[in-house]
Length: 100
Length: 152
Image (tube, rainbow over all chains, first blue to last red; front, side, top):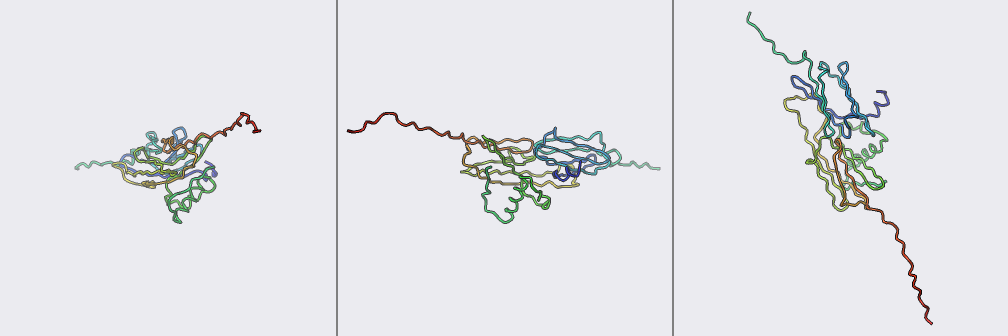
C-alpha cells in the first residue's frame, strides 16, 4: 500500500477477543462485499484491505503465534469476523506432574 | 442537487456533526480524524438520478427488527440500534466498536411519491429509495375553433 492509499483509506473499528484457543477479530465494514475484501496474514501481521467503489478500508495488526493455515473469515450484514486459532505453543497447556 | 435539512433543534454540537457529515459526504476533507473518539452516528449518503432519490445509511450488523423507518408529512425518520456483544467465552483484548443507537431525520423533497418509498439492506447498508413523481407534461390548450359570429 502506497502512502497516498494509506491516507485516503478509512480505519474501520475493530474489536479483538480471545479465549484459550482462538483470537477473534470483529470489524464493521458497511457496504463491502466478499469480492472487495483482501485479508492476509504474513510475518505475524494480519492485514485487512477492502476497496469499494467509493471508499477503501485498511487496518493492520500484530497478532503473533497464530496457526496461519487455520485462519477463517466470515462476512455478514457488513460485519467481518475473523477467527485466528492460536498456534499450539501459545495454547494454555496443563503440565502433568508425576510423583518422583 | 436536492438537500436535506436536519429537522431537530440544533445544539452547537449538532452543527459540528452536520458540518462533519457534509465534509465526509463530499469527500473534501477528513475532519473525522480530529474527532476519532467522538461518535457522529451512522454516515448517511444522499444521491439522486432522474427517477429516484436514494438515501444510504451505514448500518453494519443491523437487521430488519432493529430499525424503523417512518414518514410523516415531509419528514423521514430512521431509528435503529445495535447492541454490542462480547462473544461467549471470550475476553476483550481491544474494543473500538460501540453499541449504536441512532435517530436521523431527513426532509423529503416535495416531488417524492411518498407511497412508493422502499428500503432494503445491502451488505450492512440500509438503502432507501424515494421515487420521484412522474413529471407533469405541459398540456396544450386548444383554442376553440368554433367561429363566433359577430353580432350585427
